[in-house]
Amino acid sequence: MKRTTKSILSVLFALALLMSFVPASAFATTTDTTPTVAPTVAPTVAPTAAAAATSWKALLMYSAAEKPWEIYTDAGYNSTDFIGDGVYTVSVKASDLGATSAPTTPQVFLVDINGFAKVMQDAGLTINNYTDTQTHDITKHFQPTDLTIKVYVYVDGKKITCKNDKINYGDIEEKGNFRIELFNKWGLHNACIIEDPPVNPLAICPAEEIKVIFEISGTGLNTDAGAQAIADYEASLITPTVAPVVTDTAADATTDTASTDTSADASDSSTNYTPIIIAVVAVVVVVVVGIIIIATKKKK
Image 1 (cartoon, rainbow, N blue to C red):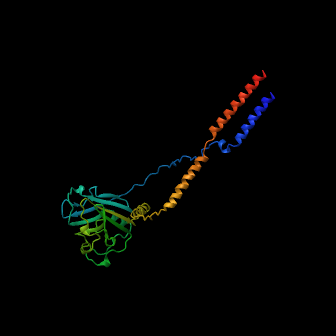
Image 2: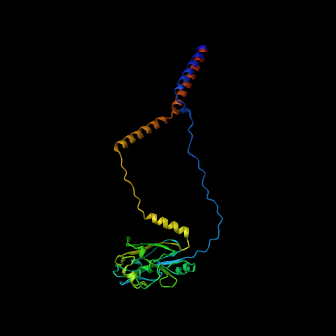
Image 3: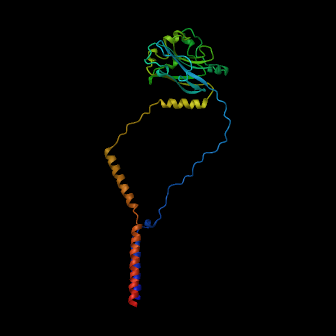
């Protein structure tokens, strides 16, 4: 019996010695360290009665001597809703008019905002940037107003030059409509619009589409949203400059090697000892039980 006891103690000692070589991390319980993020719940906002929005129609007028290139009224495809400060797009396509070829003799090219000149004038704003409509006296044109306007013109998808400092705008026909005049053979400004127009008439002969994008501010309406829209649009016109990336092949190779070694180390450090430990313990238990059974039989 004493011999049996010694044998058991020897086995247990060997087991303890063996276990001392197993890293403590092998016994650590794996814990999911992924942070728990509480779901975002949108706040409940009580509905409020929206103010009745007032809008006007901004439309592109275009005509040429060659038919059917002629549109002077709001046909839907050449207009957009206008609510004040902001960025707006109006266009006319050949397919809208049934045209099958490009015009060669433009006559009218302008934007009208129906009824909006009266709205601004009633609010006390200065909207006409001229004091004379019959001469080319530069001192009577392109005067300061309460408005800021920029125009971008695209013909068949290509941007053409538009001299914003040559644009006459205001209640040109004195009918309460706000006009941005880009070219007009019969314009009230006569020589001013014919001799030195904001756009070259030879450049506004579209085969497929002519488009105007205009910014306007100072109307007193849609001020904040309009300012943001203008800022966003102008930012979109800036082509970002990206510095060329210079790579060092040797450095890259070193980095790649280091990355590989690190990955290997990480793989080694994450080795799972649990199956080994279970196997060792199982073997030891079997041996101990066997010794006890043998010792018991000998005693009998």
